Length: 395
Image (cartoon, rainbow, N blue to C red; front, side):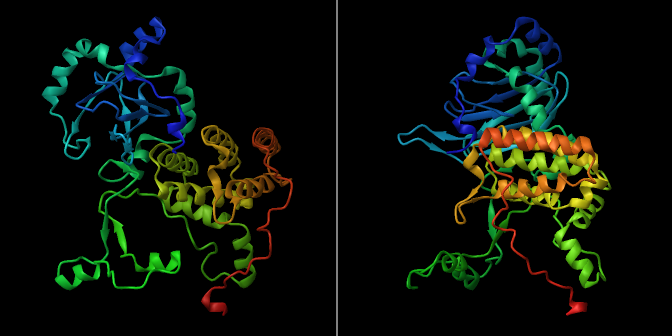
């Protein structure tokens, strides 16, 4: 079961009457509208950290606070049995009083990517009050939680990171690496049922055809550097940079963000939203890689105190929305996050780290211990000596 689906669902029409009238009037003057035509009843629909099962009269959302939001949905076959399609979503920076219009594609069972003509949008604007009773009000009480989750995600960063086709998908379209233009190519992709059964998961995976996302559908994450040391590094320097990945973090900030260190936090938040709300495994992996990079960069914690001071509330906000057992590695029966946070707290307890940052990290550590019972004082099992691979020049 997905994390977000554990929340209560409501008929979206019930939301319209739950807002304070004075606040509703102000948001009616400032807020944006998302108008959707044709979305079937029972569809799972959400905006930001809210999700509902829509009713038969649903036509969208009103009173959306201007700014960056994430719209997501899943087609549903009510059944029985009930079946839910993989989730789709998109980021959109709503302007004041904007009306964004989408139409449901019954064939593809998703929102159409065909733009709605400006004339039609303006016609809807003149009749927006006629749709009022069919528009669910944005849950303003949850806005602060959402803003904490995207506090460093700028509209440009979201546009740069989301797929070129504008849709984040839990199940992207995959194409075989082999073009498949000839009969021989196609036969190579056809299962051979005369082969003996696989004896292991690894053997089964090896028989699968190599696939890649269709162009324009992949998330455009910044590549996390795999090389932790500069060119020409001595063996001693290789060891030092492998234990402290600050060089890799600095390289990422300079190459991908033109020196804007807080863009790292923005990408961390973007990837979290994609895996939490849209169930994208690739986003989870990237989120994990960024946290591990930040946690293992001790020198950066002293040279970039603002980055690490702002990292703490980012992680605090994210951990409020996920169950404790989500981060457990099923194979190793270990919680990767506890071991990574153990390393982060070790990094931030260094006496060379700013005192205010050390105190902030300590309070966060104590909060996690009280809330989840996680022990950060015992040495994790993965603290054994590690072999360091030397560059070719020193082999």
